[in-house]
Amino acid sequence: MFRRETISTQFWTPLQYAIYDQNLQVCKFLIETFKDNEKINFTLWDNNSETNLWEDQIFPLALSISNENEEMLSYFWDKYELWELNHLILLIEIFFFKTQWYEGLEVVLQSSTTERIFLSLSFEEWEYFIEDIYTRFLKNCPNDFKDPIYKMLIRSPYSIIAINGFF
View 1 (tube, helix red, strand yellow):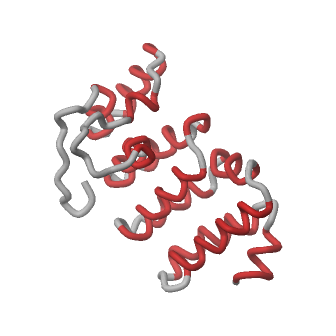
View 2 (cartoon, rainbow, N blue to C red):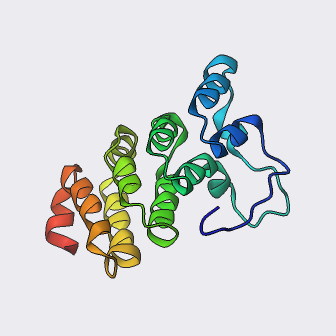
């Protein structure tokens, strides 16, 4: 998937094939017509897989990122009821360690879904998240990646931490 990683398609659903083929219309049809439970459909049911449940659940997002498909990434990430902070952290890891797609990072960080996730955090959770992001990602990354994160931090309700505490 990323840089020619091989993945098994043995347990894929029609929705997962549609995502892989970058066919957003089929994805919308499957989700909206059949009212598919996206979280179940996204999960890879391969017991031999080394991924955890969180990683399985972001599979459509990872495929969209791998394809650098902004429209599909936005469509799935905007299904805000599916995503939590752990999903966001995994996406940030993908952007930092597996791709160089800065535009995709901006799509995720500027979305209402990300804003909803941040608004649900307590002050302590937010502080831990910022410290984790800074030490794991921002300390040694290219400026192209720093800009979207800085923009997101300034918009957040606890931006004073970002300004005074870590940056």
